[in-house]
Length: 157
Image (cartoon, rainbow, N blue to C red; front, side, top):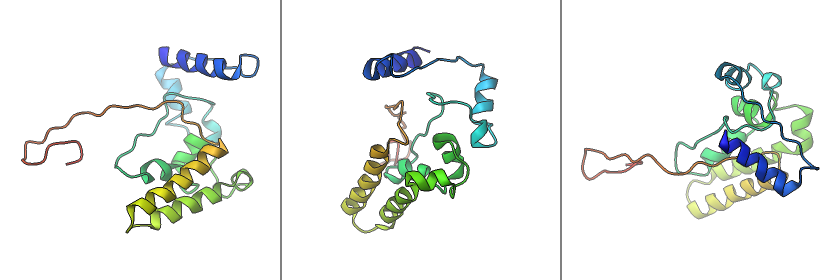
């Protein structure tokens, strides 16, 4: 709850309380799951800002962050962007197909890592500039994993 209150205070301090209204609703676990993870469609996901719905990367590449917001990633777009139909008028109007193309172009670069990262940076910049998706939290720190097999010792070994 402290995290949510801190986020509320930060947003209100930045934008001004007169410009934004943030009502905190503390939910039971069942109610939270029903409007997030168990929701059958975007309309059933009845929330505007959440610190409980998140994505954590599974590998060391920008695609692990950016692929989840492509219009073809239906479960993620339902949760993170609030729509079910990748061909909807809203998707077209805000230009998400342009984002899809930027991510697709970046994913095709498999020989030059610097160029790949530059292309993903363009996709990330487009997403940031559009303000369609604003990450509210970022977790850091890694669980230390030590392998018993030498010489490998580390989280990605």
